[in-house]
Length: 214
Image (cartoon, rainbow, N blue to C red; front, side):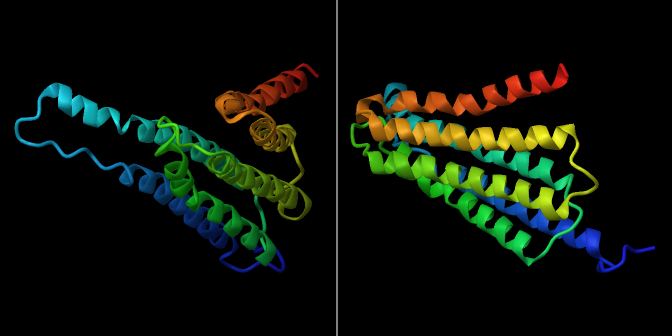
């Protein structure tokens, strides 16, 4: 029998939210790759000349790699969250849409920073914007975890769910620390701020190990 108060297609509607979200994640990643245009090779260009033209694209490839990892990490945690989603309402759908809005900003924020990152033309505004997008994604996803725990959780919160919530909170702290570093330190030191992005996974690993020993 269908749970009282739920639509006959309730589970399918939850899947629609997940499938739509997956499509947005995939499109954002694809757009980043499309933004990298291959160099124009003229007749008579030597391999050295072609290589010089290709090297100009290396910052964009670096941006693609970093942003792919950032989007992928959000998608993995989003995917993990939906294993626990048993219900939804308009508020939950709105939060998910705000998360997707931050995801579609990744191609722009990546191009905004990495198109000039190795040419001495980077400003703190570019770095704030680039780090602010994944910070917003992490904050919104953390809010989604808390909302699911309060209203839409399948069963009770198990150990893995509590680990996931802690890990998501740790990611928020990581990006906050990175942005704080950029605010405080001179611009030439800002690349070291990216090291804080490893703080989230490190805190999660320590927490998981401590949890496992109990």
